[in-house]
Structure formats: C-alpha cells, structure tokens
Length: 142
Image (tube, helix red, strand yellow):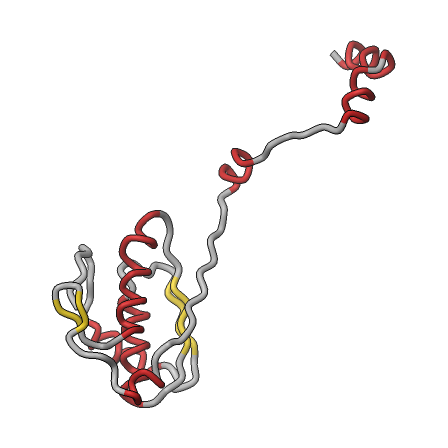
C-alpha cells in the first residue's frame, strides 16, 4: 500500500522487528507513528501468525486525520489495496485476525483549553462582585 510520507519504511522490516522482539500477545507503542507503518505491520503480522498483538500509535495534528487514521482503517478492512480501492476482500481468517475496534483519544493542549474556556457568572455572583464591599476591596488591592 503506497503512502506518501517522506520516511515511509517497508512494512516487512517492521514485521521482522516486531515478530522477533514482541510476544504474540504483546503490545507495541510508537510515540512517533508518522504514516502508521508500525500499526500496519502489527495487523499484517497478526494475520500471518495468528497473534493477538496490540498497538498504540501516537501522532499529532492534522497529519493524524489525513494520513495515519485512513491508513489504519484501510489495512484493518483488507490486506491488499490498489489505487485507493481494495484489490480483494479479506478472507474469513484474515478478518478474524484483524482489529475490530480502533479507539482514538484526542488530547487538548493547555492553550486550546484556555482558548475554549467561557466564563459565565450567575446573577448572584455578579451581584456580589458589584456590591459596595467588593468595589471597596478592589480599590484597596490596586
């Protein structure tokens, strides 16, 4: 499956590395997932040897939505693609060994959180802030 990514590595290389270092029920963590080759390799390797490996891919920004996630969905659906279309459907055995659920967790940055805050005061809170005592205290602080 061709993915336009400047550092796309062969899936077979990752299959070899994962197959020789992770048990058939282990978990692989890739903090810099890029185009998703690690996830692709885990899925392919599980289909080949019947393993039940899991994987966690971490990526940031729009790249996740435009490159990584679409690739994982395609590879999960069927093993062979050409020109953006499945060449064939997965066999029953391949489908059984493919992921059924992908969980996506989006983390919000500190700046995003601050930008998304909306301050709302109740009438009671506003009346306390408008009270003469509060006004006097605010003049003393300055």
